[in-house]
Every structure is written in C-alpha cells, then in structure tokens.
Image 1 (cartoon, rainbow, N blue to C red):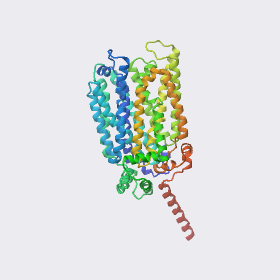
Image 2: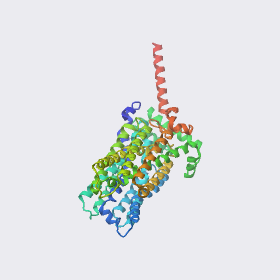
Image 3: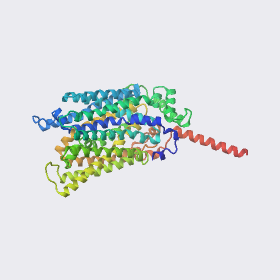
Image 4: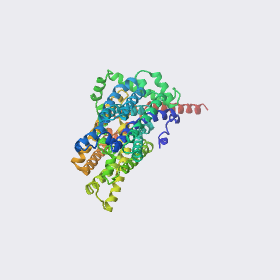
Length: 536
C-alpha cells in the first residue's frame, strides 16, 4: 500500500538510510512495551509475590492491592518526569544525544530492578527506569515525523506504536516460558523477563551511532549546510534535487516566519506562545483529548491486568492465563503493523481511528454484558452455554486489542508528532506525553477501585461509553493530515475551529514547496516544447 502512496515521489527516498533511522527510533516504542508486558506477568508470578510479600496474610486485602498497584504504576510516575526531561533537553542536545541519554537512564533503572530484594529498591528502580521510558515517547515520534517522507510518514511513525507491542509480546512469552520451566521458588522466574530489557537497550545504543540527526532540528539551530547535507543523505538524492530543495524551503520558510512573528526562545516564552494563539490552543486541545479518550477506553487496563482479566473469564490456571496473554500480545503486534502498512497512509488517520474505536466498542459492550450475566467467580462450575459465552468473551478481549492497535494506539503518537511546528514540537510533545503518563497512572491505580465500586461489568460499560464519546469527538474535531508535509499542516489550523476537523483537509490543499517547484519545472518543460515546435 505504501508503494502506491509513493507514486508521485522519487523512488530513491525509500532507502536503507531512512529505514535504519526508522528501525532505530521506531524500536523505541518497545521500551514502553517491554515494561507493560513485563509487569503484567511478573506480578502474577509466585516467585515475585513471595519475594516482595505481595500475598502476605498479615496484610489486609486493600494493603495488598495498594502495594501491587504501586509497583505496577511506579513507571508511569517516573515517565511523567521523563516526558518533562525530554521536553527540556531534546531541542538543546538533539534527537540522537537525547536517545543515548534516555537509554543509559533506562538501563540504570533496570539494573536496580534485577538486583532488588525489597519493595523499596524495586520501586526506586522502576521510578528511574520510568524516567527513561517517559522520554522515549517524546523522542521517537518526534524524530520519525521529522525525517519521514510525507506520504509514508504515517507508516514510519506507526512503526513506533507497532514496536510497543513487539515489546509487550516478547515479555508475555518470556513470562509464559519462565512460569512453565522455572520453579516458583527461583528468583530467575521474574529476573529473566526483566533482563530482556538489557538486550534492547544495548542494540538501540549501538544503532544510535549509525543514524543521522534530524535535518529540521539542525536547521532550527542554524546549521543550514549540515541540514541540507543530512537531508540529502537520508533522501539518497543530490543536494540540488528539487525534492530536497523543496523540503529545505518549506522548513526554512516556517522557521523564518516563526522567528519574525515570535520573540524569545526560553521555555516560558514558548509556553506562552502555546496558549496565546487559537491555532496552538486547538493543537493542545487535540493532543490532550486524544490522550484522555484513548487512555480511558480500557485498552491499557486490559494490557496491564490481562492475566487477571482472563481469570475473570474462567481461566483458573496461571500458566494458561500467561498463554492467553501471550496470544493477546501477538494479536496487538500484527494489528499495529497491519495498520502501519495498509491503513494509516491509505485510508487516512480518521478512518483508521473509526475502525479501531468500533472494534473496541463492540468488544467492551460484549464483555460488560457477559460479566453482568456470568459474574467472575472462581471455583464455580459453569454451564456449557456459559463456557461458550466465556470463549466469545476471550475473543472479545483479542478483538479489543486489535481495535486499540488500529485506532487510539497509533493516533496518540502520530498526531502528537505531526500537528506542531518545529519551534513548539518538543515542548508540546513533552506536555502531551506528561498528560499521557499521568492518565495511564490514574487508570492503573483506578481500575481495582472501579472493579470494586461499579463492578466488573459496570467498568466495561464505562469503557464502552468513553469509546462512543471518542468516536463523536474524533468525527467533529480531529483533522485528516495524511499525505501532507509537516509545514502545510500548519495552514489548516488557521481555519475556524469548527471546520478544522470535518473539512480542513478539503479546504486547505497541499502547498509544499516541492509541489510548486515541480509545477514550475513542468511549466518550463511545456514552454520549451512549444518553442521547439514553433521553430520547426
């Protein structure tokens, strides 16, 4: 599908220099996925529960739940700080140095985790690891959006969201394997899954020395010649090629326009600019609402607590719960990659999101109805019809994972990286990702209390209601930006707020400099042809 999208672009732009950059920065999504898949499994491992006294009979049920949720959600607390760190340093030291810094910080946190013998040390390790993980969701999408050709920007950026589920899937299978083949008395039952993170950190750190810095960032800091040379290498085209010159003109024009219109470069002046104009406020509104509606659609709750959800649906064995959870990881990975390859740049951002929301809504609605009729009780024999309905409920969880990967999971990173100008991209992405992790933390902490307060089926109906609200919101407010240069997207936000989402992409045509240069070249060619005919 993406070859079709590239029919009007030079074939050279799809080259190994680009793909290596996409693989390295796209694989950053696995940093977050590894932790999500890891923690959903090891907290159900008997060795982990014994090591950190999560099932201590001397503690009340609420104390046990609090300790479990603290360990589970500590990375989200750290990630809030990580997103802020990336927001502050990414524009100062560049995308590549930021990547290397966050990998070192993440590795330090994982070292503390694997050497933990107490809850306090485990919490400290997960907090420090979170400081690295939180930076990954700002650095990765920002870099990918800045170096990708416009017609496959969705594909390249969605590699990040797809690799989230590569990490989730690998950790699901690691937990499944260690629960089967290692004794419950061995620390290695949970240490081995945690240690997988070292492999990814090492590979990404090595890969960071073989990719090029973002040309847009280089131009932003005044290194124009280096930016042109770097873009020429990434596009595999000569520096004087129309395609390269067109991109450079677009970026230069936007940066010059911002310098003339706005003053000051410190964080306070940038923050003021983000809230002082209607266009920037609308962008922030989009970013915050995407995170709010996506995080409370129920998908992350299913990811983090998946073994417990399968237990609710009648799977009593912990090993079987791990197996079903591992299958969920495979489905999410395949769905995310399918969206990247076949949907996000072909049918557009909005339709991909609609498809995912509809799948999630049907799944959550069915799960709510099932749990209302067949309450989650262990040790109770179920009738044949209840067992069949339970099998369908398991399929609904898988369908929900598919919908999440196609919809909110891809959009929450992609839109956040696309809609901001070069001047504000790092700051705005940091703010939105801070909000992202704060919501994820609140979601992780709230789920046990929601299940106790409004029951399991009430929780599912709540998620279904959020999904309906998200569908209506995205239809009215979310603009279609597929196939546009990052600079041309800026013009859409000059429209009245009530038409940006529904008709903005129709009212504002693509106006990149590359298009104008090609039109001028075609015009000159036609004139030359006419002159030759007349002379004959």
